[in-house]
Every structure is written in C-alpha cells, then in structure tokens.
Image (cartoon, helix red, strand yellow):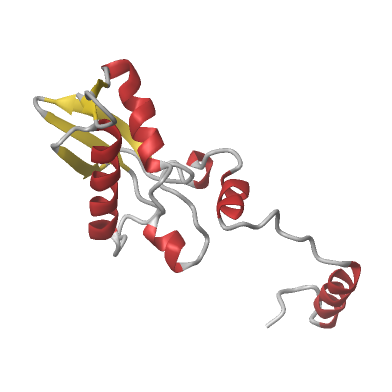
Length: 148
C-alpha cells in the first residue's frame, strides 16, 4: 500500500497500517459530535475496531456510538476519503462491527481536552461559587431531587 506525497509514493507496510488509519481518523470529526458542536474525532471516540487489507481492499471496521446512527453515510464517506489520503490505498471499504458495541470506555484518554483544544478553548470552566450555591439551593428547594 502506498501513501501519496511529494515525489515517489511511500510504502505503508502492515505494521504501519494501524497507525496510518488511526492518524486519518484523528482528522475525521464524528458527524454527531459536529451537530453537537463537540468536535470529537472518530479516533477520540474510539470507534476504530480493526483495519486490514483483504485481497486488494483496505477494510476499516468501526463501531458506532448509536447502532442506528443516521449519519453513517456521511461518516462512511469522510472515513474513506481520509484513509485514502493517508494511506494512498485506492480501495477502502468501511464496515460496521457486529461484534463490538461502543461504550464510553472506548474513548481515548483526554478526548474532551483534545476536542476543546481543537476548538480553541483551554478548558471547561468549573462553576464559580455563586453558581454552585444557586445549584445547591435549587436542589434543596425541590427536596434534593432533580430540578425541573
């Protein structure tokens, strides 16, 4: 498999395949996270299950945060484009894993901080003392349960 670049193409061997695919997926924003203005990448969310060459096809297996994801067609196109650009492989197929369910433990450590950095934010500001006090008062007014 080859990676496009200046001059002759650089060969991406199987040892580098996972790293090349992960690098590509780090630049693909999850469509749901875009809709929420969260900015998490496919890599941040830990959606990659496997990547391997089968015959002459690079198969990228993903899990989804929601098995009924309405944005799969968009995600499929974004992933194929990014992986093709990173690896130079012209025949990329995206599959959804039937065996691996997504859960928050799949997220990359520091995913929130990475997304905020991409958006130009330093961190989420913790509530100030006045906000904390108002929250405590609201909870006690409602018997300690959720504020509705």
